[in-house]
Amino acid sequence: MNREEADEYLYCAMDIGQLLLMSGAEVNRVEDTVTRIMNAAGVPDVEVFSITSTITATAHLGDFQTVTQMRRIYGVRTDMHRIEELNQLSRNICSRHPSPASIRREIAQIRAAQPINSGVMFLGYALVSGSFALFFGGDMHDFIASALIGVLLFFFEKALARLTSNHLMTALLWSAMGGFLAQIAVMTGIGHHADLISIGNIMLYIPGVAFTNSIRDLFIGDTITGVIRFLESLLLAGIIAVGFTISGRLF
Amino acid sequence: MDIQTILIQFITAFTGCLGFSIVFHVRKSQWAAASTGGVLSWAVYLAAAHASGDYAGAFAGACAAALYGEVMAHREHAPSTIFTVIASIPLVPGASLYRSADSMMNGSPDAGRQLGIYTLVFAACMSAGIVVTTLIFRAVSKKIRERKQKQ
Image (cartoon, rainbow over all chains, first blue to last red; front, side):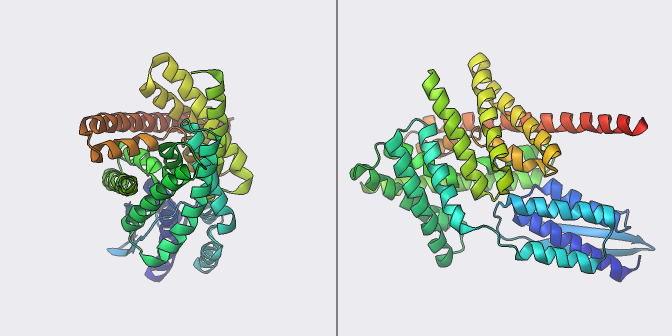
């Protein structure tokens, strides 16, 4: 394999790795995928290192020739459907060895697919909020209040995305608004317990999964990723608590 | 805990996981299967926590979620993360992570510290359950595959 071909294959593999990370896949899956694709392309010797925000890979072509590429990843949004499609694509690459051009077409297709249908998305927000308000001991009033606030917060989040790209700032304003709406819901009699209404909304934003995954990353040896995710989750949890405290103090 | 509370928890665990299936963009045909995993892991958690405490419950519940995730991944030919993540959502200590940060900030740092340690150990037990189950499952299924190829 010459250098140009290796560059093309690695470019495709990195595209897939980058999209995987952006969709919330685990780093070991990303390292594994890039390695497998390069192996399937005929490069047995490849080194990949990935953390949540970067991927670096070097393919060894023999005779002191190497190809290296790196990617930077900004922003993660969990998208299981996309992870599944990318996983399927990389399996196809490994079994059928398509050309780089056709791989790139498939990647473009996956990238162009509408990420998440927001017409259904707000239902998800309502369902999560209401369910967990009940789960943690609320009554039917709290269920309704929390679900309604979940929908409002969904649209508030969309509006915030236009205002700022800093996710901590977004979390702060989001949770201040959440706390404020819960107080109003109790005052108007829609809901009964402000704290139980809020816990339903908090489940949407609190990085519980990320926190648990960060410790799993530490267990399986992805130490840097684990530490980064661990600190990010603690910071986010703190910010959310500040947001809800602010609006609690106002009343 | 009375039977009514448990029933409500099972139902809301299902609908909560269904909500997260939408938010995390799981394929529609997998919604029901993924959410059923949440009820399963919560049931195992309740049983184990009743027998020998919350931490054992976290470990056992996470084992159930990971095992369910691996089995469903085989059946659906999809990555196991989809099912494992959704199934472990009722267990994930999001509420106690929030409550710990909240206590720290609102004048009861001791309670906050205690809750923080609880959250940390709980998440560690869950992670251990997921990692151990996944490793054992993959080792065993690899052995089975190899044996089948030999025949």
